[in-house]
Image 1: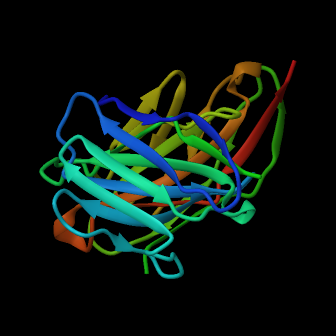
Image 2: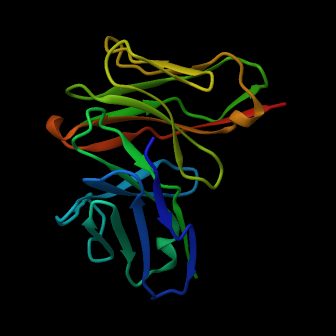
Length: 117
Length: 115
């Protein structure tokens, strides 16, 4: 299957700082990228969907000003957690897909663990 | 709306036991169905998939059959190993022409396999 990378794999930051997480599709063009959040021992919660060159579509309850998403190219999307606070500590996972695919499959990154002190 | 329901865990089995994790779905149209596995501290890995009714996905001894009549996609393995201990997620995905390109996950089922 296709390969999706995330960087960094883990990050620790102080409260009030901003953190940027990168998601890259390494061997295919991702028309759509998704950002998920996963709390310990829970399922993945979709935060937002971004199509290349368009504004992201956020799920209900997700603050778009706090979680800034940019999808400027077919291989890169970024999630910036602005003014991070301890409650933003979580495991963030991105996935990438191509709308032209007939199998509706998404390929997942390895995740980024964010800890806000 | 579309949803996925899977059996609650944790499931605890002895090595070489038979595994079944139930999964049912509710969806309009014709979704693709997936099982993902997540090992501790890691991201999701695709375990197997099925894209249409009666398809059987299989990988590493795991199997699941897309049953449209019962809207189910149960995961089975004939003989589990300690290394199969992980969390398993059932999921469905629909393409952009059928109501939005997104994946919907079940709650996850944690499997513990004892030696």
